[in-house]
Amino acid sequence: MQLSPRAFDIVKVCDGSVVKEWFRVVVKLQECGRAGLRRVEAVYVFFDALAITVNAKHQTWVNGRRVNLPSLLKNEISVKISEKTVVIEKISALRVTYSMTQDISVTVSDHFADKVCGACGKMTGDVSITVDSKSVKKWMDSWRAPDFPTCEQ
Image 1 (cartoon, rainbow, N blue to C red):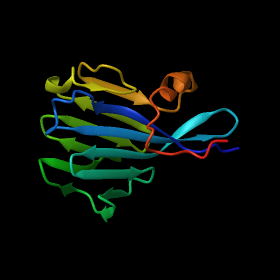
Image 2 (image 1 turned 45 degrees about the horizontal axis):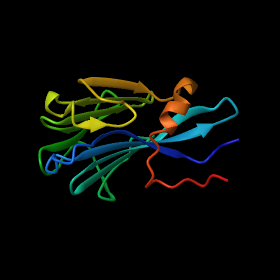
Image 3 (image 1 turned 135 degrees about the vertical axis):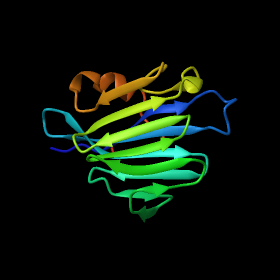
């Protein structure tokens, strides 16, 4: 039994005064089997005029176009692969890592710690998440990304 994928806001800039440095990280999870285990289907990292998508096979797209890694994008944003981990980074703001073992780590600079919110809560630096735990299901559901539709009945 497979249920429809669900997307969650892991972290995003919630302080409206930080328009130039806006970012958002969304993780799309697929619930598999009766045990309710979840696996990462894709990680989405949004910046002002840039959308980066990485799927479970670490295939990467920027603004809908497939790219080979490493890739240096505009506004000091880079995407690279290191030791089976995709690293998306905006210098002095955000670092997202997504490993083949389904671990996701998000780090924001001290400058942003009090300006972000999401499933990770108020951040004070490095936050690591392993998304296959059933114990976080109810809490994560409160951070569903409303612009990522599901086909629930």
